[in-house]
Length: 314
Ligand code: NCD
Image (cartoon, rainbow, N blue to C red):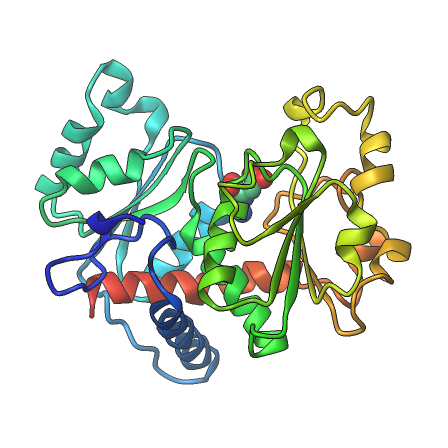
C-alpha cells in the first residue's frame, strides 16, 4: 500500500502500485480503458483531452513495449511526449534524481513515466514532486501497475467476472514486478484461486504472497486453470533456478500444447513479454488460439490512456 499516491480527497495523484487500490478503483480504470478503446477504434474525430500537456518518459532500464505503449497512449490523447535520453543526461554527471525531477517540473512536465531497477524510485520521486504526476512503469521487483491493469483488462475481456477464476502464474516469480502487480490486481478483483509456480529458488515466501498457493509442480498448477500467465526466465537466473539448461527448464516449466490440455476448456495464455520461445513457452502455444499475448500488447495503450487521463484530466 502506498498512501503517497492519493491526495487529501483520496483521488489518485500518482500511480505507484496496485496494492491498496481496491477492486472498485481498478474496475473504474478498466471501464475507462474500455471506453477509450471503443472511442479510438471508431471512425471520425478523436478526443484529445491532453492537448497542451507534456508527458516525459524517464526510463533508466531498457524497454521497448512499455515505453512505446506509453508514448502512443499519450500522443493519441494529444499530449506532447519527451523521451528523456538517460545515456546523455545529467544524472550521469552526478545530478540527483530529485534535481532531474525539479528540472523537468520547471519545464512544465505534467507527468513523468518512470522505470528504474531500484525498488521505490517512483515513490521517491512522488515524495518530492511539486505538481507532476509520477507513473511507475516498473521498479525493480516491486511493481508494474500498468502491466497489472492491462492483464486485468485482457482477462476481463475474455472471462468477464473474476470470482470463478483460477489463475496460474509460472516462472521467475521472485524477481518479477509483473507477478506482484498481478497478484494485487487478482486479489482486488476477487479471483477465486491464485497459483504461483516455478523452481523453488525463484519462488517468493508464503508471507509475501498470502492467499496464493505456491508450488513447484507445474502440471498440478495447470489443472483446471482458467488463465495461465507465463513469465520470462531471466537467463542470468538460470543457475539460481538450479536447472542445467534452457531445455531442462522447458521440460519442467515450459508451456507446450500437451501441458495446456490440463487447463480448463476456455483457458487463455498470457505473457508480459519479452518472450523466450522454447524456454518458457512453445511456439505452438504462443501463436495458438488460446494465446492473448498480442491482445495484452494492444490493451496496453487504452489502459495507459486511462491512467494518463485519470491523473491529468480527472
Ligand atoms: C516486463 C518488465 O520489464 O517488467 N516486461 C514488460 O514490461 N512488459 C517483464 C520482463 O522483463 O520479463
